[in-house]
Image 1: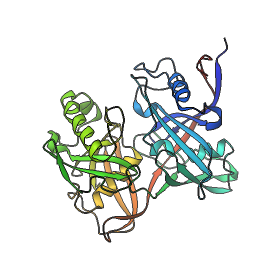
Image 2: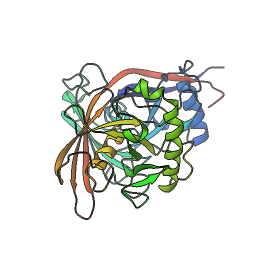
Image 3: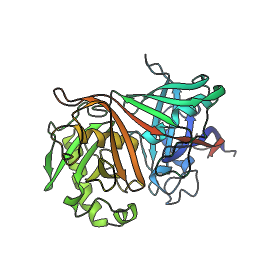
Image 4: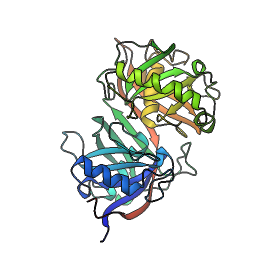
Length: 359
């Protein structure tokens, strides 16, 4: 029996990678969709050997695009985090790195017409209802992938893509501090439960016996840390109103330490069963908000009292990620928008094949 062919673009978005697919070319019902995505990426094997996924969480992501009916947005972005060693699909989070490729992919798919010079692609993130403007370089009305911009975690340089995130406080929970507190204690550790672009539980690295400067490999090999961190994350998820999060990747977990270079703060971001090799974009925005919001555990960071385009520099295992915040501290954190500079590259275009019996 022939295989089922699904058109897709295979792209790097920021420091992540995966297929970008037109939603109309995928099953409509969620159960069949999950089965198709698992088969396409080869989830359930540590190397995703029977699919186009990779052996890390950052390489088992899927972007699904469609025209948007939102009054502001042009494109709907529906994200799926596919498992690696486990056959799972999680639609609850988002991914700011994969989002970096949504603007170029939307133009390549004909969902948004390219302008001559630069094209603003207005995106609605279906998973979180976040609105994002992606500024894509389009000389001669074609996406330009080559350019001078370097981002830590990706070799070489590429054309810049600016992502401006709006309406991101309370992305999943509806509140900056879903528990009603800027800091609290869980399992003897002081944490901040915060929701800006991505719900997170943030703690001091020292409270888990770390310096905060450990490599991804050092952290991933520390089973004692994960056995201690996961119960704390799950209890935080319940307090944040997210219910039982034992089988969900949100809230994410972050460890903070003072900067070592010229950054504002050092962060280690967990996905949550492994340390991110660099840093998630939405997680970086959440950490930046934690830095400037009064009363959080990030008071170690030296941030100004607010203003347009305050740059928070976050040191991570692969280098640095900068987040530009437009915010005020009047009656609490008032965040107008957060901007992050990313790049993307089209790696391949064609069809991904899945067993016909699935769909």
